[in-house]
Image (tube, rainbow, N blue to C red; front, side, top):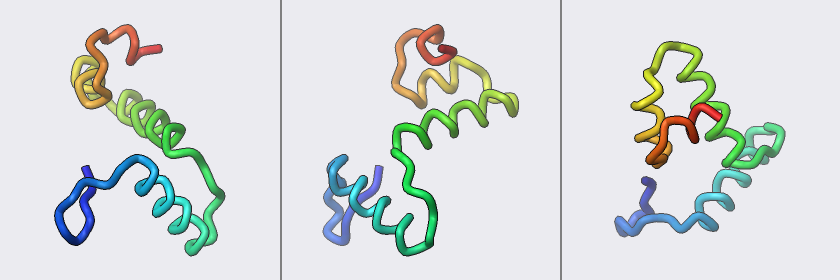
Length: 68
């Protein structure tokens, strides 16, 4: 979870806007945050993080969903 200066959680729209702005400032290719999430879970799975842990982090109740 990310929060603003007042401690209020960012909405998805606020998070997306800030991420895209940061990508632009850094000269990075613009990618969807959902794609980066998937890439992160793939990296973690390929580097030994157990499936049941990944499922919990992803918010999935079924490990099969995560493995897909």
